[in-house]
Image (cartoon, rainbow, N blue to C red; front, side, top):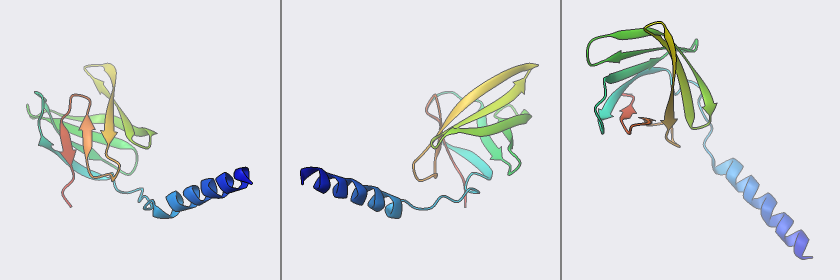
Length: 114
């Protein structure tokens, strides 16, 4: 009897989580994200994510890197890969649970103006 009760509770929790989690819009990332909080010295000022999986980022020195791609490593982590000075570099970005903030590993916060 106890196993039945725990089984019903477990199924209830899964159903509750499924229906209470907002549906993700796959286009939420597309567009330009601008630095809002600079925690550490950073040269990156903005990211632009395109629907085709390419990405552009600009820095405070006016240099634009447009040979980049991005992919989701997990639900909350984006890996972007760029060719910088002939070398491949991969950078992780953390995404907030509600998809409203992207944070770099050094703590800089980027948001997208809607």
